[in-house]
Length: 173
Image (cartoon, rainbow, N blue to C red):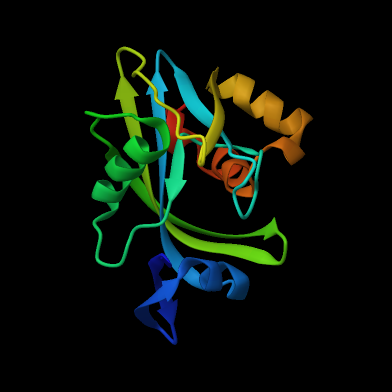
């Protein structure tokens, strides 16, 4: 079954198949979540079989809403589907836009609803191996240091978020 995502075509929001949106670099809706506990963010290493950016480290969860799906509902759904995280309350932080080459002739041109979740205790995780192969918890400084040392190990969007939007995620330094 093809996944249809909200995409702007000739200025009109239209359902377009996800792969087609990436092949053509079409501007489309997306959702990104950063889950933070004790000052550390949960990052995930994308599964080896993902059709783009396999094996790279990304934020807690990043995805595309289904056609007519509320972004917050999408964040909750994908946290469960990818990481087995349930019972959290994503807080909308901002809307941002970026365009990035993700390799293999694919382009992410995303209009992102960015959410942050602050937890007092780390949630139980049940990783979906089709989506996620590993996770790690890092504070902002450690994540920035790792990205600077080995940017090729991180998704383009996580690099963009940390370079331009880390205060939205972690708060002022």
